[in-house]
Amino acid sequence: MDKILVQGGRRLNGSVRISGAKNAALPILAAALLCDGTNTFTNVPDLKDIQSTLELLSHLGARCQMQDHTVQVDAAGLNNHEAPYDLVRKMRASILVLGPLVARLKRARVSLPGGCAIGARPINLHLRALALLGATIELSHGYVEASCAQLRGADIYFDVVTVTGTENIMMAAVLAEGTTILRNAACEPEIEALADVLNRMGASIRGAGTPEIVIEGVARLHPVTAQIIPDRIETGTFMAAAALTGGDVRILGADPTHVDAVIHKLRLTGAHIDVQDGTIHVQSNNGIGSVDVKTLPYPGFPTDMQAQFMVLMTVARGSCLISETIFENRFIHVGELRRMGADITVSGNAALIKGVAKLSGAPVMATDLRASASLILAGLIAENTTEINRVYHLDRGYESLESKFQQLGAVIRRVKA
Image (cartoon, rainbow, N blue to C red):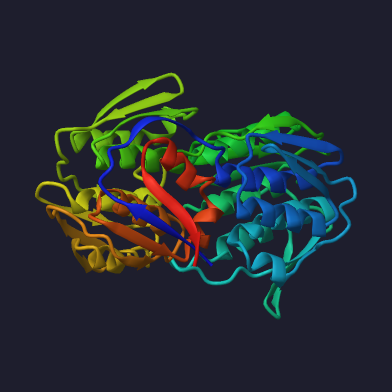
Protein backbone atom coordinates (compact mmCIF):
# COMPACT_ATOMS: atom_id res chain seq x y z
CA MET A 1 0.00 0.00 0.00
CA ASP A 2 1.40 3.40 -0.99
CA LYS A 3 2.09 6.28 1.36
CA ILE A 4 3.06 9.88 0.74
CA LEU A 5 5.91 11.71 2.46
CA VAL A 6 5.83 15.51 2.67
CA GLN A 7 8.70 17.69 3.84
CA GLY A 8 7.21 20.95 5.09
CA GLY A 9 8.40 24.53 4.88
CA ARG A 10 8.36 25.22 1.15
CA ARG A 11 6.48 28.20 -0.28
CA LEU A 12 4.52 27.17 -3.37
CA ASN A 13 5.28 29.06 -6.58
CA GLY A 14 4.42 28.60 -10.24
CA SER A 15 1.50 27.37 -12.30
CA VAL A 16 -0.69 24.27 -12.10
CA ARG A 17 -3.38 23.03 -14.50
CA ILE A 18 -6.66 21.67 -13.18
CA SER A 19 -7.95 18.27 -14.33
CA GLY A 20 -11.48 17.43 -15.41
CA ALA A 21 -14.10 17.05 -12.68
CA LYS A 22 -14.67 13.51 -11.47
CA ASN A 23 -18.10 14.44 -10.13
CA ALA A 24 -19.12 15.72 -13.56
CA ALA A 25 -17.56 12.85 -15.51
CA LEU A 26 -19.26 10.04 -13.55
CA PRO A 27 -22.91 10.95 -14.32
CA ILE A 28 -22.03 11.93 -17.89
CA LEU A 29 -20.45 8.52 -18.48
CA ALA A 30 -23.61 6.90 -17.06
CA ALA A 31 -25.70 9.03 -19.43
CA ALA A 32 -23.98 7.32 -22.37
CA LEU A 33 -26.14 4.27 -21.55
CA LEU A 34 -29.20 6.18 -22.76
CA CYS A 35 -28.45 5.91 -26.48
CA ASP A 36 -26.90 3.79 -29.23
CA GLY A 37 -23.71 4.94 -30.90
CA THR A 38 -20.33 6.20 -29.72
CA ASN A 39 -20.20 9.09 -27.25
CA THR A 40 -16.83 10.80 -26.94
CA PHE A 41 -15.86 12.65 -23.77
CA THR A 42 -12.66 14.69 -23.47
CA ASN A 43 -10.82 16.08 -20.42
CA VAL A 44 -11.78 12.99 -18.40
CA PRO A 45 -9.53 12.64 -15.33
CA ASP A 46 -7.52 9.43 -15.05
CA LEU A 47 -8.77 8.22 -11.67
CA LYS A 48 -9.72 4.96 -9.98
CA ASP A 49 -13.38 6.00 -9.84
CA ILE A 50 -13.38 6.58 -13.60
CA GLN A 51 -11.84 3.15 -14.21
CA SER A 52 -14.41 1.57 -11.89
CA THR A 53 -17.23 3.25 -13.82
CA LEU A 54 -15.90 2.08 -17.18
CA GLU A 55 -15.59 -1.45 -15.78
CA LEU A 56 -19.25 -1.30 -14.71
CA LEU A 57 -20.42 0.09 -18.07
CA SER A 58 -18.52 -2.66 -19.85
CA HIS A 59 -20.18 -5.27 -17.63
CA LEU A 60 -23.57 -3.86 -18.70
CA GLY A 61 -22.68 -4.38 -22.36
CA ALA A 62 -21.21 -1.04 -23.41
CA ARG A 63 -17.92 -0.82 -25.29
CA CYS A 64 -15.54 1.53 -23.46
CA GLN A 65 -12.12 2.87 -24.32
CA MET A 66 -9.94 5.49 -22.58
CA GLN A 67 -6.80 7.07 -23.99
CA ASP A 68 -5.11 10.37 -23.18
CA HIS A 69 -8.05 11.65 -21.09
CA THR A 70 -10.54 10.87 -23.87
CA VAL A 71 -13.22 8.26 -23.23
CA GLN A 72 -15.43 6.63 -25.83
CA VAL A 73 -18.58 4.78 -24.76
CA ASP A 74 -20.83 2.91 -27.20
CA ALA A 75 -23.91 1.46 -25.49
CA ALA A 76 -25.43 -0.07 -28.65
CA GLY A 77 -24.77 -3.48 -27.10
CA LEU A 78 -26.39 -2.68 -23.76
CA ASN A 79 -27.85 -6.04 -22.77
CA ASN A 80 -27.36 -6.48 -19.03
CA HIS A 81 -29.58 -4.78 -16.46
CA GLU A 82 -27.66 -5.93 -13.37
CA ALA A 83 -24.94 -3.94 -11.59
CA PRO A 84 -23.45 -6.50 -9.18
CA TYR A 85 -22.16 -5.93 -5.67
CA ASP A 86 -18.52 -6.65 -6.58
CA LEU A 87 -18.51 -3.64 -8.92
CA VAL A 88 -20.85 -1.27 -7.07
CA ARG A 89 -19.09 -1.67 -3.71
CA LYS A 90 -15.99 0.05 -5.12
CA MET A 91 -17.80 3.35 -5.58
CA ARG A 92 -21.07 4.80 -4.31
CA ALA A 93 -21.58 6.74 -7.57
CA SER A 94 -22.32 3.43 -9.29
CA ILE A 95 -25.95 4.02 -8.31
CA LEU A 96 -26.02 6.52 -11.21
CA VAL A 97 -26.64 3.66 -13.65
CA LEU A 98 -30.04 2.98 -12.07
CA GLY A 99 -31.94 5.78 -13.83
CA PRO A 100 -30.46 5.16 -17.30
CA LEU A 101 -31.04 1.38 -17.08
CA VAL A 102 -34.70 1.75 -16.12
CA ALA A 103 -35.23 4.38 -18.84
CA ARG A 104 -33.50 2.35 -21.57
CA LEU A 105 -34.09 -1.31 -20.68
CA LYS A 106 -37.24 -0.81 -18.55
CA ARG A 107 -35.62 -2.70 -15.71
CA ALA A 108 -32.58 -2.60 -13.46
CA ARG A 109 -31.06 -4.65 -10.66
CA VAL A 110 -28.44 -2.58 -8.87
CA SER A 111 -26.63 -3.49 -5.68
CA LEU A 112 -27.24 -1.11 -2.81
CA PRO A 113 -24.15 1.02 -2.17
CA GLY A 114 -22.25 0.26 1.00
CA GLY A 115 -21.52 2.57 3.92
CA CYS A 116 -19.30 5.61 3.69
CA ALA A 117 -16.70 6.95 6.11
CA ILE A 118 -18.10 10.48 5.92
CA GLY A 119 -21.64 9.53 6.80
CA ALA A 120 -24.81 7.92 5.56
CA ARG A 121 -25.92 8.79 2.05
CA PRO A 122 -29.22 6.95 1.60
CA ILE A 123 -30.76 6.48 -1.83
CA ASN A 124 -34.36 6.51 -0.66
CA LEU A 125 -34.88 9.82 -2.47
CA HIS A 126 -33.81 8.21 -5.76
CA LEU A 127 -36.19 5.30 -5.25
CA ARG A 128 -39.16 7.43 -4.24
CA ALA A 129 -38.70 9.63 -7.30
CA LEU A 130 -38.39 6.63 -9.64
CA ALA A 131 -41.62 5.23 -8.20
CA LEU A 132 -43.36 8.53 -8.97
CA LEU A 133 -42.17 8.15 -12.57
CA GLY A 134 -43.99 4.80 -12.67
CA ALA A 135 -41.31 2.29 -11.76
CA THR A 136 -42.04 -0.64 -9.48
CA ILE A 137 -39.36 -0.78 -6.79
CA GLU A 138 -38.38 -3.76 -4.66
CA LEU A 139 -35.48 -4.26 -2.27
CA SER A 140 -34.27 -7.85 -2.20
CA HIS A 141 -31.06 -9.45 -0.92
CA GLY A 142 -29.14 -6.18 -0.93
CA TYR A 143 -30.29 -5.13 -4.39
CA VAL A 144 -32.64 -2.49 -5.79
CA GLU A 145 -34.89 -4.10 -8.38
CA ALA A 146 -36.77 -1.60 -10.55
CA SER A 147 -39.01 -2.21 -13.55
CA CYS A 148 -41.63 -0.43 -15.63
CA ALA A 149 -43.66 -0.74 -18.82
CA GLN A 150 -42.86 2.91 -19.59
CA LEU A 151 -41.75 5.77 -17.37
CA ARG A 152 -44.12 8.73 -17.29
CA GLY A 153 -43.46 12.31 -16.27
CA ALA A 154 -44.26 13.40 -12.73
CA ASP A 155 -44.00 16.34 -10.34
CA ILE A 156 -41.22 15.36 -7.91
CA TYR A 157 -40.14 17.18 -4.76
CA PHE A 158 -36.90 16.18 -3.06
CA ASP A 159 -37.23 16.45 0.73
CA VAL A 160 -33.46 16.99 0.94
CA VAL A 161 -31.20 18.43 -1.75
CA THR A 162 -29.47 15.46 -3.39
CA VAL A 163 -26.89 15.75 -6.16
CA THR A 164 -26.83 12.12 -7.31
CA GLY A 165 -30.59 11.89 -6.83
CA THR A 166 -31.14 14.89 -9.10
CA GLU A 167 -28.76 13.41 -11.68
CA ASN A 168 -30.29 9.93 -11.57
CA ILE A 169 -33.87 11.11 -11.96
CA MET A 170 -32.97 13.66 -14.62
CA MET A 171 -31.42 10.85 -16.70
CA ALA A 172 -34.47 8.63 -16.17
CA ALA A 173 -36.93 11.40 -17.03
CA VAL A 174 -35.40 12.34 -20.40
CA LEU A 175 -36.90 9.17 -21.93
CA ALA A 176 -40.16 9.28 -19.95
CA GLU A 177 -43.46 10.18 -21.58
CA GLY A 178 -44.61 13.70 -20.79
CA THR A 179 -43.24 16.38 -18.46
CA THR A 180 -41.23 15.88 -15.30
CA ILE A 181 -40.59 18.68 -12.80
CA LEU A 182 -37.85 18.29 -10.20
CA ARG A 183 -38.34 20.63 -7.24
CA ASN A 184 -35.70 21.40 -4.61
CA ALA A 185 -33.20 20.02 -7.11
CA ALA A 186 -29.46 20.30 -6.57
CA CYS A 187 -27.85 23.35 -8.23
CA GLU A 188 -24.22 22.22 -8.55
CA PRO A 189 -22.22 22.96 -11.73
CA GLU A 190 -22.06 19.20 -12.28
CA ILE A 191 -25.87 19.18 -12.63
CA GLU A 192 -25.66 21.88 -15.31
CA ALA A 193 -22.88 19.97 -17.07
CA LEU A 194 -24.96 16.80 -17.20
CA ALA A 195 -28.03 18.67 -18.44
CA ASP A 196 -25.95 20.34 -21.15
CA VAL A 197 -24.70 16.97 -22.41
CA LEU A 198 -28.19 15.46 -22.31
CA ASN A 199 -29.64 18.42 -24.23
CA ARG A 200 -26.94 18.03 -26.86
CA MET A 201 -27.96 14.35 -27.07
CA GLY A 202 -31.49 15.49 -27.93
CA ALA A 203 -33.12 15.84 -24.50
CA SER A 204 -35.26 18.83 -23.49
CA ILE A 205 -34.19 20.11 -20.06
CA ARG A 206 -34.76 23.62 -18.69
CA GLY A 207 -33.68 25.13 -15.39
CA ALA A 208 -30.61 23.01 -14.58
CA GLY A 209 -28.55 24.94 -12.03
CA THR A 210 -31.72 26.19 -10.29
CA PRO A 211 -33.94 24.46 -7.69
CA GLU A 212 -36.58 23.70 -10.34
CA ILE A 213 -35.73 21.59 -13.38
CA VAL A 214 -38.30 20.90 -16.10
CA ILE A 215 -37.78 17.89 -18.40
CA GLU A 216 -39.86 17.18 -21.48
CA GLY A 217 -39.49 13.50 -22.34
CA VAL A 218 -38.27 12.49 -25.81
CA ALA A 219 -38.43 9.20 -27.71
CA ARG A 220 -34.70 8.74 -28.24
CA LEU A 221 -31.28 10.32 -27.87
CA HIS A 222 -28.17 10.37 -30.06
CA PRO A 223 -24.43 10.29 -29.26
CA VAL A 224 -22.34 13.45 -28.83
CA THR A 225 -18.82 14.70 -28.24
CA ALA A 226 -18.44 16.73 -25.05
CA GLN A 227 -15.73 18.11 -22.76
CA ILE A 228 -15.77 17.54 -19.01
CA ILE A 229 -15.74 20.73 -16.93
CA PRO A 230 -12.76 21.51 -14.65
CA ASP A 231 -12.73 20.12 -11.12
CA ARG A 232 -13.81 22.85 -8.70
CA ILE A 233 -12.64 20.95 -5.62
CA GLU A 234 -9.15 20.43 -7.04
CA THR A 235 -9.20 24.14 -7.88
CA GLY A 236 -10.13 25.00 -4.29
CA THR A 237 -7.51 22.64 -2.89
CA PHE A 238 -4.69 24.37 -4.76
CA MET A 239 -6.08 27.80 -3.83
CA ALA A 240 -6.01 26.81 -0.16
CA ALA A 241 -2.50 25.36 -0.50
CA ALA A 242 -1.21 28.60 -2.04
CA ALA A 243 -2.72 30.70 0.75
CA LEU A 244 -1.51 28.25 3.42
CA THR A 245 2.13 28.34 2.33
CA GLY A 246 2.30 32.08 1.63
CA GLY A 247 2.68 31.17 -2.01
CA ASP A 248 2.30 32.72 -5.44
CA VAL A 249 0.37 30.28 -7.62
CA ARG A 250 -1.49 30.55 -10.92
CA ILE A 251 -4.24 27.97 -11.30
CA LEU A 252 -4.91 27.31 -14.99
CA GLY A 253 -7.89 25.78 -16.75
CA ALA A 254 -10.27 26.48 -13.87
CA ASP A 255 -13.78 27.95 -13.87
CA PRO A 256 -13.69 30.72 -11.25
CA THR A 257 -17.49 31.01 -11.18
CA HIS A 258 -17.66 27.50 -9.70
CA VAL A 259 -15.55 28.46 -6.64
CA ASP A 260 -17.03 31.84 -5.71
CA ALA A 261 -17.66 30.81 -2.09
CA VAL A 262 -14.08 29.54 -1.66
CA ILE A 263 -12.62 32.68 -3.23
CA HIS A 264 -14.72 34.83 -0.90
CA LYS A 265 -13.57 33.01 2.24
CA LEU A 266 -9.91 32.94 1.20
CA ARG A 267 -9.97 36.68 0.55
CA LEU A 268 -11.29 37.17 4.09
CA THR A 269 -8.23 35.31 5.41
CA GLY A 270 -6.03 37.94 3.75
CA ALA A 271 -5.11 36.13 0.54
CA HIS A 272 -4.95 38.21 -2.63
CA ILE A 273 -6.86 36.51 -5.45
CA ASP A 274 -7.00 37.79 -9.01
CA VAL A 275 -9.45 36.16 -11.42
CA GLN A 276 -9.02 36.42 -15.18
CA ASP A 277 -10.77 34.16 -17.68
CA GLY A 278 -9.83 30.57 -16.73
CA THR A 279 -6.92 31.57 -14.48
CA ILE A 280 -6.98 32.17 -10.73
CA HIS A 281 -3.88 33.87 -9.31
CA VAL A 282 -3.43 33.39 -5.53
CA GLN A 283 -0.85 35.32 -3.53
CA SER A 284 -0.43 35.33 0.24
CA ASN A 285 2.43 36.60 2.36
CA ASN A 286 0.90 38.57 5.24
CA GLY A 287 -0.22 35.73 7.48
CA ILE A 288 -3.63 34.10 7.75
CA GLY A 289 -6.69 35.56 9.47
CA SER A 290 -9.37 33.40 11.09
CA VAL A 291 -12.70 33.05 9.28
CA ASP A 292 -15.84 31.15 10.27
CA VAL A 293 -17.19 28.68 7.71
CA LYS A 294 -20.48 26.82 7.36
CA THR A 295 -20.81 24.16 4.67
CA LEU A 296 -23.95 24.38 2.55
CA PRO A 297 -25.32 23.00 -0.71
CA TYR A 298 -24.09 24.84 -3.80
CA PRO A 299 -23.63 27.80 -4.19
CA GLY A 300 -22.65 27.72 -0.52
CA PHE A 301 -19.24 26.70 0.80
CA PRO A 302 -18.66 23.10 -0.35
CA THR A 303 -18.41 20.29 2.17
CA ASP A 304 -15.63 18.84 -0.04
CA MET A 305 -13.48 21.88 0.87
CA GLN A 306 -14.14 21.81 4.61
CA ALA A 307 -11.12 19.68 5.56
CA GLN A 308 -8.70 21.71 3.41
CA PHE A 309 -9.96 25.01 4.82
CA MET A 310 -9.69 23.63 8.35
CA VAL A 311 -5.95 23.09 7.81
CA LEU A 312 -5.64 26.75 6.84
CA MET A 313 -7.38 27.73 10.08
CA THR A 314 -5.08 25.60 12.26
CA VAL A 315 -2.29 28.16 11.78
CA ALA A 316 -4.46 31.29 11.46
CA ARG A 317 -4.48 34.22 13.89
CA GLY A 318 -7.19 33.83 16.50
CA SER A 319 -10.05 31.34 16.59
CA CYS A 320 -12.85 30.31 14.26
CA LEU A 321 -15.81 27.97 14.03
CA ILE A 322 -16.38 25.51 11.19
CA SER A 323 -19.89 24.07 10.96
CA GLU A 324 -20.57 20.96 8.86
CA THR A 325 -24.21 20.71 7.74
CA ILE A 326 -23.95 18.16 4.91
CA PHE A 327 -22.38 14.98 6.36
CA GLU A 328 -22.55 13.91 9.98
CA ASN A 329 -19.13 12.21 10.20
CA ARG A 330 -16.96 14.61 8.28
CA PHE A 331 -14.60 15.58 11.10
CA ILE A 332 -12.73 12.26 11.12
CA HIS A 333 -9.57 14.06 9.96
CA VAL A 334 -9.53 16.18 13.14
CA GLY A 335 -7.80 13.47 15.17
CA GLU A 336 -4.99 13.27 12.63
CA LEU A 337 -4.54 17.06 12.59
CA ARG A 338 -4.34 17.02 16.39
CA ARG A 339 -1.47 14.53 16.11
CA MET A 340 0.33 17.25 14.18
CA GLY A 341 -0.27 19.84 16.91
CA ALA A 342 -3.55 21.45 15.83
CA ASP A 343 -5.85 22.84 18.54
CA ILE A 344 -9.33 21.69 17.50
CA THR A 345 -12.37 20.97 19.67
CA VAL A 346 -15.37 19.24 18.11
CA SER A 347 -18.89 19.50 19.47
CA GLY A 348 -21.61 17.92 17.37
CA ASN A 349 -21.43 19.34 13.85
CA ALA A 350 -19.13 22.21 14.80
CA ALA A 351 -15.37 22.45 15.26
CA LEU A 352 -13.64 25.24 17.18
CA ILE A 353 -10.16 25.85 15.81
CA LYS A 354 -7.61 27.93 17.71
CA GLY A 355 -4.66 28.89 15.56
CA VAL A 356 -1.23 27.64 16.64
CA ALA A 357 2.22 28.89 15.69
CA LYS A 358 3.19 25.74 13.83
CA LEU A 359 2.32 22.15 13.02
CA SER A 360 4.73 19.24 13.43
CA GLY A 361 5.23 16.40 10.99
CA ALA A 362 3.90 13.02 12.16
CA PRO A 363 2.67 9.69 10.83
CA VAL A 364 -1.03 10.14 10.00
CA MET A 365 -3.74 8.10 8.31
CA ALA A 366 -6.16 9.26 5.61
CA THR A 367 -9.79 8.35 6.26
CA ASP A 368 -11.46 9.58 3.07
CA LEU A 369 -10.74 11.42 -0.17
CA ARG A 370 -10.77 15.03 1.06
CA ALA A 371 -9.13 14.12 4.36
CA SER A 372 -6.22 12.77 2.30
CA ALA A 373 -5.81 16.13 0.58
CA SER A 374 -6.08 18.02 3.88
CA LEU A 375 -3.25 15.97 5.42
CA ILE A 376 -1.03 16.72 2.44
CA LEU A 377 -1.78 20.43 2.93
CA ALA A 378 -0.92 20.12 6.62
CA GLY A 379 2.35 18.42 5.68
CA LEU A 380 3.26 21.35 3.42
CA ILE A 381 3.57 23.68 6.44
CA ALA A 382 4.56 21.23 9.18
CA GLU A 383 8.06 21.01 10.60
CA ASN A 384 10.03 17.99 9.40
CA THR A 385 8.33 15.10 7.56
CA THR A 386 4.68 14.08 7.49
CA GLU A 387 3.92 10.47 6.56
CA ILE A 388 0.42 9.99 5.13
CA ASN A 389 -0.84 6.42 5.02
CA ARG A 390 -3.80 4.84 3.16
CA VAL A 391 -3.53 7.31 0.28
CA TYR A 392 -5.55 5.05 -2.01
CA HIS A 393 -8.43 7.37 -1.12
CA LEU A 394 -6.53 10.17 -2.82
CA ASP A 395 -6.34 8.33 -6.13
CA ARG A 396 -10.13 8.19 -6.31
CA GLY A 397 -10.47 11.95 -6.76
CA TYR A 398 -7.16 13.69 -7.51
CA GLU A 399 -5.10 13.03 -10.61
CA SER A 400 -1.32 13.13 -10.06
CA LEU A 401 -1.70 15.39 -7.02
CA GLU A 402 1.82 14.86 -5.70
CA SER A 403 3.29 15.54 -9.16
CA LYS A 404 1.38 18.80 -9.40
CA PHE A 405 2.62 19.88 -5.99
CA GLN A 406 6.16 18.99 -7.05
CA GLN A 407 5.75 21.36 -10.00
CA LEU A 408 5.03 24.12 -7.50
CA GLY A 409 8.17 23.40 -5.46
CA ALA A 410 6.80 21.12 -2.74
CA VAL A 411 9.03 18.34 -1.41
CA ILE A 412 6.61 15.45 -1.70
CA ARG A 413 6.93 11.88 -2.92
CA ARG A 414 5.00 8.64 -3.04
CA VAL A 415 6.62 5.47 -1.72
CA LYS A 416 5.59 1.86 -1.34
CA ALA A 417 4.66 1.13 2.25
